[in-house]
Length: 465
Image (cartoon, rainbow, N blue to C red; front, side, top):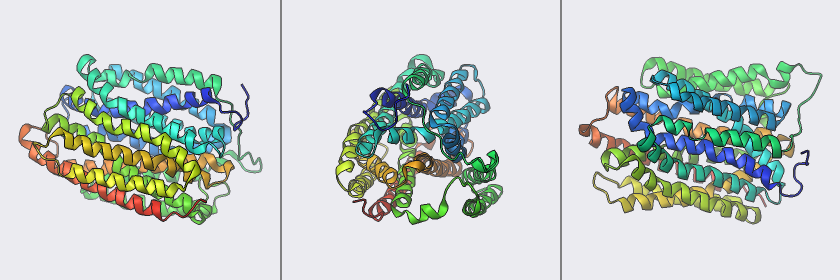
């Protein structure tokens, strides 16, 4: 099939891409409900436990920009297929894991694979859609993600109870293999760019910039997660300095990963990126912290906790395509900023949760979070993708996904620091539940602050029309 991108709506191609966009977030969300069982089976402390959802974030962010450049050089579909194959393999081998170190290793591999998948998926969808349907198509992709997030806690909770925590990792493997076959069959080969033969391969890929970027993100991630240990503080300082080195290198590279000067001049794109970092930073710890709150403090089973958490992602899935379609017709920043405000209200409701809070209050907070994020995500992505040259959709897609992952990474590493401070290496016991509630309130307060910052960047990005 060699259908040109942007002609008649290629629904089978869209479904092929959306399948992986559904399965990977579902697997990530499902793991959160298995955390207590993993801790009990592998005999790990709270700090190791907090690394289970964190490890794939590092794997994802460290390769995001180099992978996007490779996709421009060799085709987005090819890189996407490599990511699907690696993700299926990394998920399948968890059957033989009996040590936390190996589990974290395969979680990192899952993260590396997801960078191949998400660095290419949004660009492929935007090319398939064309400008008139871009918001709607991106909304459908967002719906796929949120449906995965919605079903993940339910599937993770019940699978953990019935088949054990390892089954949560096997869950996406058959679907990922199917997605690989469908992409190979229905998604057209994407055109390559950046084929300047006057430059060597290392210049076209910007290997030096890629290595600096990988070292920079690694230092930032591990530096933040290891605080307040002074050795890790040194890593954090090194990461900040390397950010400056990376920016300077990109401004002088012959074929940079990111065109820094062009990005600075594009206010809509830059503010959309900043809003994404803040909102995903606010959203990501919710599953992790509420899973612990509902199971430890409220005494619910994994399945019951997953059913309650389901409401947030389900509402995201319902609202996102509608918001995306609206952003094709009306000002995206207004819709996205309203979503940020709704998100803040959800955190306010959750902040007042206590040891004996009725579950309807938790459900109300999750409803507000779900509607708010559904209103934000698709219009924000539409504004960002609509503000760049079509030839740069690949790097724009990677930067949006990097913003998502960076927000997730930052907020999750902050949670690692908080857990380290309050619990150290001890296993959570009933006497620790009041302290756990304090951690929940800190996480919710920080989420509200991130969402407020996201609303500011969304509102001040400028008009598209």
